[in-house]
Image (cartoon, rainbow, N blue to C red):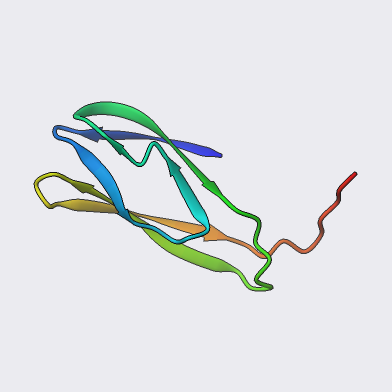
Amino acid sequence: MATIQLTSRVAWSVNSKPDWVTVTPSSGGGGTQSVGISVSENLTKQDRSGEIRFYNEDGFYESLTVMQDLSLIHISE
């Protein structure tokens, strides 16, 4: 999981993201908050990318691009 610091003067929420991305929490109030971003295993046989959009209650948004390379080897015990 990657963690970012999100700062907003008003409430915000994630209104758009790829289905293979999880954002925790997906909304918050004003101020600075740690936000976790994780991705599910890439079984598509292709690299993939997508955009997360963080909207504030005033209707403005910031985008974050997430890219995931193809996993070629998986080892499980």
